Image 1 (cartoon, rainbow, N blue to C red):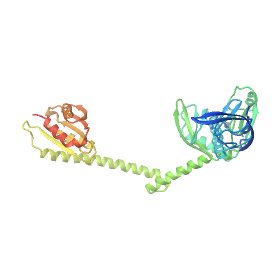
Image 2: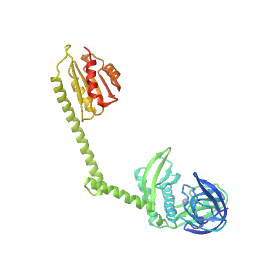
Image 3: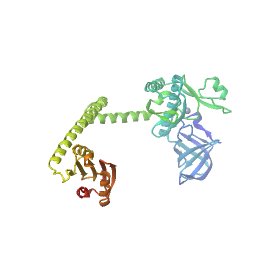
Image 4: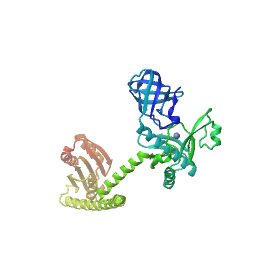
Length: 399
Ligand SMILES: [Zn+2]
């Protein structure tokens, strides 16, 4: 059985222990050793919190597993039986303590003030999450919860470990019921929270530093709330400000005016787009008129207008085809030189079959496409055949 030193003092970073066993083991696919000690300050992965890193003797700790009575340290080299010194990677552990204690407070505030129970917790390497049961939390509710948490953080309330049986803990007002026998461990945040937990926590709420909510989204039936505490909150706030400053710099306004400036840019973009659409329609009308007036009709009175168009959006082909075929007995054969996009269209009075013409064309020059009687579109397999394809389509239009 391994004595868990972090139960009584989560600030203990160095410890001395007896090595009870050291057996070969795999860590992923790499060779490693599984070490059991009589006591340890290293926290194993459990309750949503990641395991510690650190050292046992000269060996680096790769993983720490909770296997009931024993804690198993997975390390990168063999160590001898006997007395050994161990230590905890403190920055990592302290970060975990900040996130985890922050989670206690956040869950307590959602539960006590808004009746939203937490059904799961995950401490990520970047962002931590809790899943709330119940209806979608509004922005106001989320803001109020974060404000309440930060209020308790600023009051620097003490956090203590309580031991007792399930009945004793219920009697002093534990938040989550447990039905395990024996002596249980509970964490009390003065005046805010009391719940069973085997994890590691800071001593006073002030050490959580600050809690920032990052987002909320639906996961199955619950609402997943993302948050960061302590050093992470400071890093995220700094990164957010850098982003805002970059945006402001690009928009030539102070960071706090970036959102309003961006709205103006989008509104201008929408106006430009509308103007461009109108201009393209007028250009298509003009180009169609020139093409129609410079094309002699065939002996049956049909005008076939064949054009290779370049340096313009593929949708412009549709606009110009529509303009040309407004006139009776006209057929438009259009191709875009860069891409091989092709449109075959007719005024219904021309009485041809555009999809059939496209199929006949693709029998000679490979491509893909289709359409309805008066309008077919497709794409040539090889855009360099664009001009040849239009000449071929023209020759396929027999009288
Ligand atoms: Zn805890």
